[in-house]
Length: 156
Image (cartoon, rainbow, N blue to C red):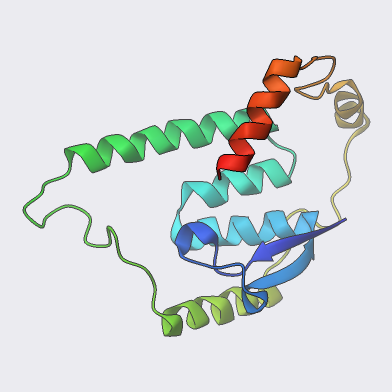
């Protein structure tokens, strides 16, 4: 299965332009987000890495995003309004910086030892995967719920 990876992630100002996308495997996608996390320390990349690697499920990824989002909202409400606080707040990368990030990401990916490549799961782990139940397994949606989802998508 192929994934589309944003070389400069959207949370860092990247776009959906073809020059900012690369096709990778799920394993490579997790590794790229790990590399971005290690370089920049952004929680979005950490959650993406864990989710793509199968370490956490969808529900846990959403929970972590909500917790991190609330922390950011609190930080924004409480920061000083006299110019102090986060000097990067509200700023975006220049095209030159975005290009440098792309090149650095591609170079780092080419040089990186792949931490998951070649690893084999134990029989115990394989059994755990078999017992895993999807978060939405067996849940029924009412017609009203389906309609509200459909209306919500139309508003965007």
